[in-house]
Image (tube, rainbow, N blue to C red):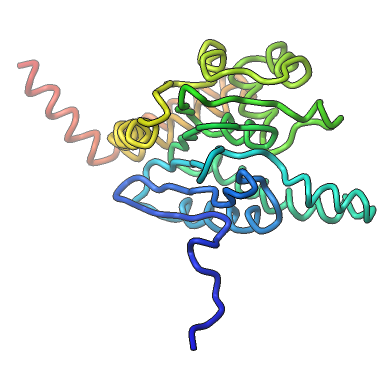
Length: 265
């Protein structure tokens, strides 16, 4: 008799690895991939797996079904509000989910959000706490937090504010009901927009292009750029010096330089 283990299809999030590209798929399509306790725990686990995998250079995050991610699961949160258990329930859920977000920022791999349909609340935060975002033409971003009288979570104040600055971030979170992929691209939040039918193929192509970067250079560039806004200039320049020397001590650099100098002779 088969064990009653969770089948992959029923897992709230899935991981597949294909060469240098890993893909995490949010897999609660009936709930528009809303973040509940089950998906938060699974994402924490999968994030740790990707972070520890030395062969992966790029992580793609996508949503199954009609939406990327509809944000925090209001069924879970509403039930906690009724039971007066918001602090422990939401605290545990965000403890797991924020461990995943922390791993995305910390891991020496580039994280690419691939967004279609709705990215609302924590889904919007996830799209923009990723290092880069590619979006379908039909993608729609909805801050949602202000509508229910709460502040952002899931790294919303990290990725978005760092990309657009404090004034635009305040505008987005407090004065925008929703905005299109085209607006997001104008604001510097989306790198590429493609027809919805081409999103998967275009995401794969973009991920493979990013994965052509040497691991040391990719990791150092990501770390330097994310730390720059909060690092004093002398410390940042020291970090740039140490990072470039570290990159130059790799085989990839030696091969690339040899190739370049032999062409210029």
